[in-house]
View 1 (cartoon, rainbow, N blue to C red):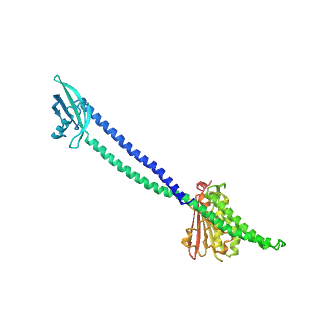
View 2: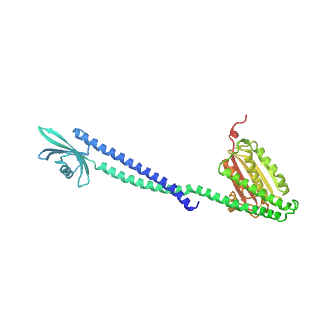
Length: 411
């Protein structure tokens, strides 16, 4: 999967939601304008019909023009809202019209709608025109259309920027996952290459002397067995890391008190600490419960202890503390030593990362231990962090959510 494939996937994440968003905002603005227009025109028609129905309809927005003889207006009524010139323009536009209703504009820019009715007056038949000045209503619609257009354009721009940012970042986890997979394969291949080479060389040496006995080849066989053990350890670590990162966890979790588990792991490392003259102190609060499995707690504590012992100097000191806060069970492991530079702390939980790749005491370590510990802690909805002071100490802190049983009153 190359960059072109990622760009194609990113475009799909961008264009499809963008088209839907644009269609939605255009449809919404169009519906608002359409509803407002229909309502406004309906109100004008209703006012026009009411004004034409009787002389008692009060409004400042209509004019009566009555045509009696020879298509000449004999009487008209209008409020002071209209100037005389405007009235004459209106009269000129409607007089002699043969249609029952319509609309027109005057030179002053006003817009009118009218309706004609036939009336009888003093035995004579006349045509009465009722005219409404609907300029304000149409101006309102024009302003609304401009406003909604601006809202639509701004909304489309915001949607464009949002989905551009979203598409760019939505594809990032997929890209990072693929890159991590490639990195895992590359690093695993690199780590497996050396043991395989050693095993092959040992076997070739054994084959070179067909008459040799098992005792004669003990050195080569032990070397091959050791390298096979390293490869098995690497494969098992990779499988465990993949299991937690893909959330395919088969371990049965329960609410358990972790004090005995942590203490037991501490005791199992005392012999190694004794050999290096390292002082190991253990401090713990009582009855701390978390929702996890025994194997997961043992794995987390074991990885932290193993890692600390490797980088604690002769006659150094390690302190493992188990505390209960308001919401978390906190496991803190502090060891004296050279410390870790800040730029390396940022990568301490990366897979196959080693603070000092030339360290001779790493044994079967491939730089996967802390990555596995972090994956387990993450799967338990917890947190793990590292802090260090060069030349003084390194401290790892694990926070695991307390079990609900911690908050129940003791009986």
